[in-house]
Amino acid sequence: MALSNIYNQIPKRYLLSLLGFFGLLNAYVLRSNLPITIVAMTTPTLEKSSINTTTILPAAYNWSTITQGHILSSFYYGYVVAQIPAGFLATRFGGRILFGGSIGLLAFLSLFTPLCAQSGSGTLIFLRVLEGISSSCIYPSLNDIWSVWTPKKDRSKLTMFTLSGAYTGTFVAMLFGGVIAANWSWAWVFYIPGISALVWVVVCFYLTANSPSTHPTISYEEAKYINDNMDQAISRKQAIPWKDILTSLPVWATIVAHFGTDWVVFTLSTELPTFLVKSLGFRVDAAGVLAALPWLTTTISVSGTGFISDKLTEKYSTLCIRKLVMALSFTIIVSSFLLITLLDASYRALILMCVIIVMTASGPAWASAGVNQLDIAGRYAAILMGISISIGSTPGFLAPMITGYIVENPHLKREWNDVFIISILIFALTIGFYMIFAAGELQIWALNSADEYQHILDSSISSRNISERNSLIEKNIYDLTDRLKAEIHAENNAE
Image 1: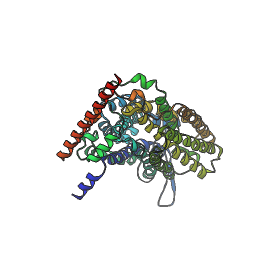
Image 2: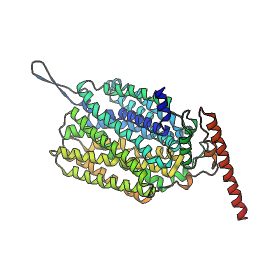
Image 3: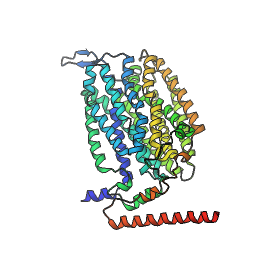
Image 4: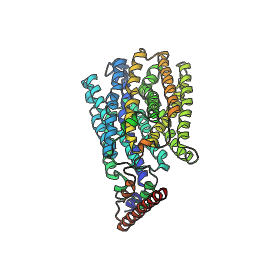
């Protein structure tokens, strides 16, 4: 009974943000465990016997760096292709089912990773493509969920806290993946998070609802607060303004910013374990722990940026804050990358510190671009996120492939420097585009005239308290009547 009372008192938008956090955590553990596991799968190991002799055990798989690049990038083949259809589905049918269902399917498929690896690299690549397709609905559905659930005053902190789950998931995968692979079995790096994610799916569907108006235990005060602080609503049946979206420079500013930040993030997330082991000389288990550190600091920076951004938007314009985050991220990332290229491999502690700084700064830039889509598109933000990730995630397969061709000998740091310089150039160009063309307010094509009063009529709350519900319906009718009278009076005066 006590737990039930505590649950009823928790604001449901905060609970949704927490569940979204753990959803992304599970999803990113599942998609990020292969970069650290593939190092263990392709690296010979030393085994000490009871008579103090050491035996070198051959690697489980003798894949070339080019083959490894294709394996690591294959996830994004399916991930990129399915993003736009995923955004369309989320806008039409709502994000809750797509969000939970896509993570559940990803978890189920990941359980077959060891079996597919034994069958050969081609089978493993095919499985990763399927995992990418199953993951394609995650971000578009999240944007659709937040377009219904986040009041404008809470948008940055709720959304960025949820998005920080992605970085936490990568941190968990890197931290424990290397330890499990080195001391137990690399196969369990896929089994454990797969089962965990399936449990999360059950909990998520049980505790959430499609909207505040359909949630069975939301309070009247919270539902009213959300309704009063939302952007203008649109109908799910309303035609999507594709031409306006695709010709909008502020839309392309967020897409280009995602591409630039994704290039930095994917380059480090897929190649960092190999860089630490082969170029800087760390052991596999130590590399997993060290590769995890940037993701922990990124989690903190993304969440902190969300809270600070909401506070600053009370005094300054939304656009000003979004550009401020981008400018600070750009300065920090470029400076740190340049220092990495100038340092010799013997300064590995300092290089690792610079990598941590790069990741810490890239997280807020990526998240800020995502929140900016909610700023300018409202309920069309799911469509924008689908387009954005479809284009912005191409570094997910381009970066590992290009790295595979550039870095022929992963033990030579000078070959890795070219990879980092490419990241600097791409990030500089994309963030420059964002700074010129970004916007901070809801765009004209995202406004809705046909359903102008729909959000008032649809805000009745599913509650066990009948008098509360009747009172809300009565208040909505009065609000609608007053607004109609005001418009009629204004028209009469104009005549």
